[in-house]
Every structure is written in C-alpha cells, then in structure tokens.
Image (cartoon, rainbow, N blue to C red):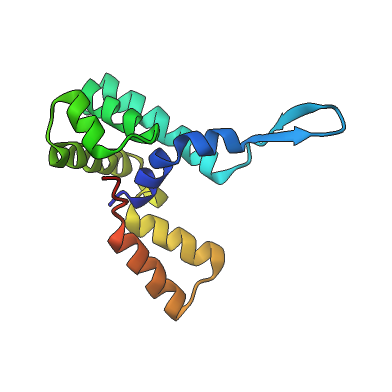
Length: 142
C-alpha cells in the first residue's frame, strides 16, 4: 500500500539535498521547490507530525522511520531499540501504510501506479514492469 512513502522516507536526505542548485554566476545556491519528490516528502513529513500528535503513530514509530532515513540498517536499529529485526520492519511498513492511507491518492500503491501511467503514458509491458516493481517493493537493508 505504501511503496512511494517508503521510498520517500528511505531517500529523505538525498531528496532534501537535491533542491539546492549551485548558481555559478552569483557563487550561491538557488532552491528548487518544484521538485515532485521534495513536495511529496514535505506532505509525508507533515502527515507524520499530524499522526504523531493524534497518537496514531508512536514516538518509537517515528524514531524507526528517522533511523532508516539516516541510512541505518534494520539489525543496527533493532540493537539500538532492543527490538527484533522483524519488529522494526513491521513497524516501518505499518507506519508507511498509515501515512499512505491517510494521504490517499498517489501515496497509495494503486494511486501511484495510476499517476505514473497517466504522467508517462505507459502501455502494456511498461505497466507490467511498474506493477512488478511495486509488488516487490521491499527494500531490504540487512
């Protein structure tokens, strides 16, 4: 249900860094706020805050998402939080599903597939490849 949310969180810091564009003429940086990834990430981060405040997500859920966003692997997080690796994975997937369900639209797997099909005018084999990618959807960091 939450492939896009998972990927936005895994790539959180890369996405945030990618909006800075070096301007060689003025020897400064310009900010590109038109990035679809960045804007999607902002919506996800805002929703995390709302779900935490409404106690739908716990502080531990948010901590797990933050540690994964920083590039930590499941086994290290499990050691730090004194939880099993499977519990960490389950918490992350459940949290991402809650976020995706709450946001709806392109943040759900089917909504994202429809968005990609329309945006890129995907056909036959391309749609099948997208479905396979989303079905596999588990980015394992052992």
